[in-house]
Length: 374
Image (tube, rainbow, N blue to C red):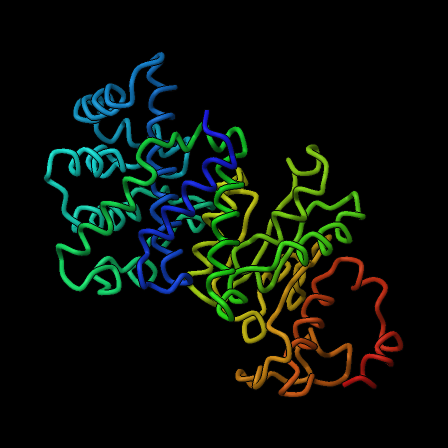
């Protein structure tokens, strides 16, 4: 099997060669999005193989068997896969279908667009459905973007080359060996280095993540962890890696992200790292303007977490666009609002408000030094 270092090198070399003049922070959405769709297709085929009791047959034979069974069983087969995964990829929309079309000369970019759009319709209506919803929105993966090519032929060529980059990778096997998650995280980091100032929108430097994770992981009883500026989710995942395997099994991940494309990246990253849908809750919204997760058992009380970590935009100016007041529960205990030019203090109070130990132990007298700083 291909090693972690080999796949990292191959994929990054491919990204460097294929993206041309496109900005790295933008190209990552296309590359990582299509890589994730390959994973969804492979998971669909694996689930069908297991349920159909098929042995070690080739991928082309597996796709043929899936196509034939779908024609015979229809919705019955769809629901079976959907029940196991929370979604399914229909035979005509499989990543493998794109590859076949490329090899036969029948490929069209529109077929990729149709596949991504159809995925939304295959998601099971359950409590986990939001984890897959909108992952391939046109605002994130616009295959008509002229940055991919000035005309349709050029865009076809660019997309085909990108699809072929993942063609022979068994995403399910790579995930089971942790190679896939590592490669995905590596690519996010590499794109961040190429993105300059824009990197802060979706990535926390590895060294920073490691230090924060080691501090947070000193609490061995963590069952829930929250990042209000979650970015790509790398900080949450780094904390998880520092916990024991037993703790990781029951760990619930929570996050909020303002940028829609980055929010989609967060969900993909968590799912590729094996975080089960029921163990992740990620929201697309402005954390300071829209607090969230009210405790269902207590009105106007925010849900508490065992650990809160974040790498917010420091000294964020004009942070209070929503006109929040001191009466907001997050700021009430401090008795004052952070200055308009110091949004990092607002993020700090938000985090403290949602930290489980804070509600019991933090009082107004404990805020005395903090209010002097403000």
